[in-house]
Image (cartoon, rainbow, N blue to C red; front, side, top):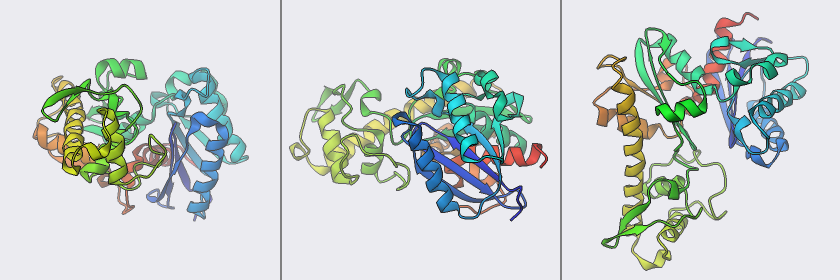
Length: 346
């Protein structure tokens, strides 16, 4: 392997993702590690070490994007961006590190403090920029464990109108809802159960990971962090947690009742994403045959959205000439690695 082989890092607040490219600049290996960054920078350091152990042989050029600067470990985004960048520099002394700054391209670590607004939570833009290089048009739908990015692109340009998380929330380009970590209480005020509308308890009793575990759709690697109660991640345990949301014990109803409730709540989440996609598509910037490009551990929902919207579906992994299992789970990490390899001479 060339000494200039790239690693692409996506430093999240809950998960660390890294993609290794081969000598030809194609994705070769990916690693995901749980990283509860809000508990301390040592969690990131440990996750990096575990990832490197799993990668084995590696390159010495690093392309970095992040969302972990949002966690409440930091006073604000500026502190978070600097802290995450510094952590990587300390871990890889003497190696080339470039930080993704959206339209400003890749910056050296010493420039991070002066480009916080461009660096913070720009990982979605890396994925969309790569998709815009490789497809004529489409709507990138990256559904992760925590949130969902909806990004239109056409004519080699990303057509997002928002840049910051705040603006993207307003515009519906960021939907803070994912398939593993979203609290169930955030999905709906009330649910149909036992012939009545039951108000959900405003407690962190269950998450969307429990819903999709009950529906049988959750990938095994999609829910890396502890469950809401810190107990088992089985269908029965998920049903027990979900039952608490309506003030019951799991034995108060049949298994089929909890599956039905999980399916209802999953449909509520899908409708929210469908409405957001429909609003973006109503701008009229994409041709009628532009595909939904699915990424993230929740891309099974992106496939369903494509069906509902009457559009073709393409997996993000299809943008690469590489057969790496679950590559689309780590779209931003793959994107920053490839963008850096293509645009930054070594």
